[in-house]
Image (cartoon, rainbow, N blue to C red):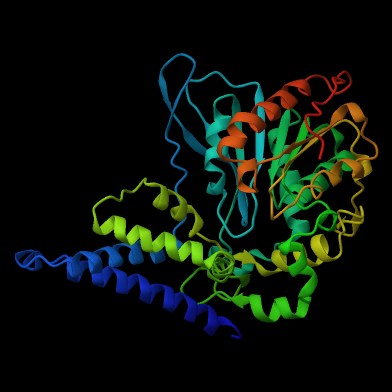
Length: 425
């Protein structure tokens, strides 16, 4: 029962704030108050609306919002999200476009399990859907997974990726964004040794901590300062009675969100104050800039405790991937076994989470891979989010990734085109 009371206390505080917001909105919106117009009621109503929405979306999984797609034939086609592989901790989903000819490029987009849902990659999916068959790893909220489903750590994550790659077949091009970059590399190496015919054609790693010590950031410094005992004592709690995963040890989403917000607390406070003013003036909307951002940013998911702790201990502290000492089920995973999967790294010059140098380290680990199948790109003005979404991704990085995919889509024995060395990090 330890920590369960704390988990339920956080949920109680969230629920109470949502209720207070709804109450303020309802009270200040009574028609009778319109008889004596008073700006105070507008502000109370606006505060209530923003507060209720803020705390309600913390426990709501965002919708992908990708319903139609205009194909080359000029017609709008419906987009259906089909589950290809269903697993306890995450599914492999496919954004199918019925009526469209199957695209030659088959892309597996590996989403991070780092506090937010896979929908964080919505704009990335939309941009790739134009030219590719897009598959995504859709990780589940740990609070909704019964304890009977067992554990889930970095080794299980790696095994999930190998299963997803097998299900998609050898003509797959993997794009791993942020946190899963080192584990996607490990999964590819595992297949290279155990089942070479199931390897993907190419592997693109975007802003991931393959070698966290290559270029330290606040994230890596935190991992060094705090002991594993401190992390387990302060960050890990048991899911409360409200959810199917009651009793499961997790790193709660609400606690993660508190950490996210504390890094830029003044900026967030100003954003919400400004939004209340906009609502009071009637200038807000469901799809305005504030709501579009915070609908996603505030939607957090609990992370399995063993996954969070093993990531910190083995990837950041132990540097098992960086040292090529990572093991899965007692077997060493040798990155040097990758010999015919083209590998490309993408980094942002202003990335303060996975700084330049951390991701490109993957190329040095692939000792069995010829230089013609290695590539790297540094986007000088892009931050962490910008390297997989926004202007930098749309205008510069996406075209290079598609070019890299096309250059390595042929027969493995003959795929010897030089990889596009754009701007080496």
